[in-house]
Image (cartoon, rainbow, N blue to C red; front, top):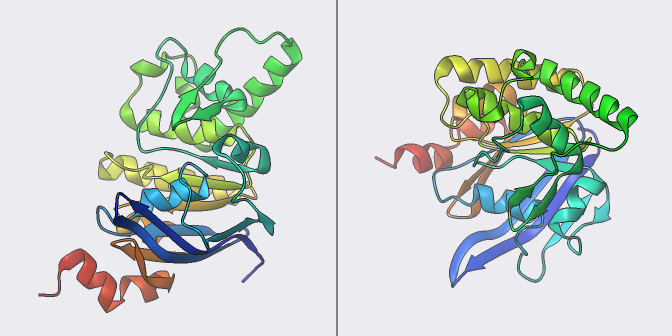
Length: 256
């Protein structure tokens, strides 16, 4: 394995006495696609929210990105240090085109989980040109270039999901966190997204951490998986090790 880009340990989170995460530890190596699986309520999105600093873990947690402690940082610092992410919900500016929505990712800020973008005219024409070219490159990787000038609110759902990925790429991240990018898609749309993410990974130096309910989707994409149940890690390792774990099978299918 290569050097760890993201390392977390002893991460616990409770909401009103309910334990959402319990002593979670995870290492993500540079350049890999790392998947997180688990039933509903397992704590997957909570873990991503801890990594992206929307949620503060309990005392005793440790978390480093590129060997630097990031626990003292806030959510709006993440894009600056090289961490980008998408969310389960789709947030777009319906008045803007797909291209404009993606370009806005270069100036996005997060506040309480809500995306704030500035879609007005850019003052610097050269900056506008450069951002447009970068956005079009990302759109090409995600296969949505043909929708560039369409109103963002008027494109298919699956395109909006890929728009989110492109927008997250505009802050030039080294680590990309994807929260259920294939949710709500049919098998054909999932297959297309799978090809797009593979191409993205092959043509960049990105490290990707991805959450999905579809274990088959992640098994086709990831080199390693981590499985959560009720906030606790029940398996971690290669795809075959995790998907064949009796604890993981029981968590998804039941012990009977």
